[in-house]
Image 1 (tube, rainbow, N blue to C red):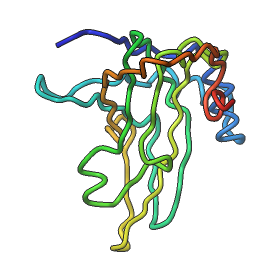
Image 2: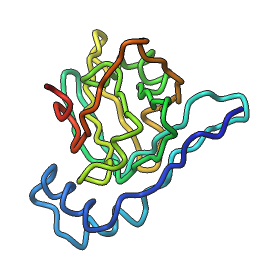
Image 3: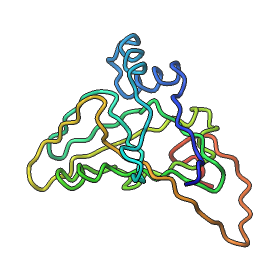
Length: 170
């Protein structure tokens, strides 16, 4: 296996700022406590392709409900690789839990953005079976898989990223 990336936490200041944007009624000391309890993504077994992301808080989603939150996680990835994020397989199968952007794409240059490459997630319970999904704190809810990619022979991209969603739109 190639070792091409390293998960880290964003700074405490960045996390508290982003958490309070997502949850304005949160006291800064509560956000700080959440930050300190965040676990870095990890594989469950030596044969696992996916790195599980763990919930920073407990939450429940009734059918049709959505939650969006910052993870406190960033990842330094070698050039030529990308992190693709998906819901954990069992959650998708049992509850139809979905990422709102279907597959999250974390590019290698995102790490160097002003927001420290802070990974955010937006999940929806899209069940057709009227099931509420409950995710306890520190339980895996999403998995990230590193994938190598190529570019075209005539590629001439020179733009430098600074941000997340929509930051590379020309």
